[in-house]
Image 1 (cartoon, rainbow, N blue to C red):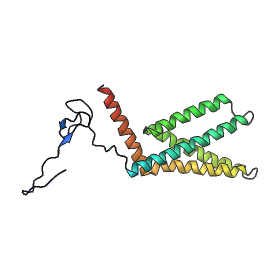
Image 2: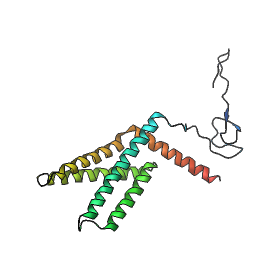
Image 3: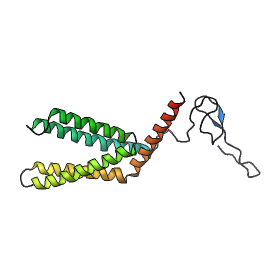
Image 4: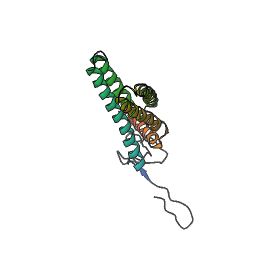
Length: 180
């Protein structure tokens, strides 16, 4: 902590490597003693980070559950979808959502496009089926939720903050593995 003496000068703050305890300069990013990466990124999860993590989890898990239910219904209805098609869809969606959760920007944008297009298609399908079945209302509600999820992934600062945290964590892990 900086302390001010009587001549209005500041005493330097001492920094230490969390792994070996070696005293290091603030601008140092690599410990000269143990070669570990020194990060100024606070590992304590802030309130915003936890909220972004929770929001990201809610979006991805609930979207996956809807896709899972749709695939199960698609298997049950004759000639709509084979077990292999449903399994491939679920595996690809799970992989996409895992990469999105880990902070990969391309996976996030593919997820946004996937949810947006699926939502808009669902709204169109629901409106066309409105006169035929009551189930169309459920399709429309789920489609609107998907569009809302894609908008949240685009606009939410909490999601962006969590994605950035995940990218930094991934890069630090990659750097630490390089020196092992």
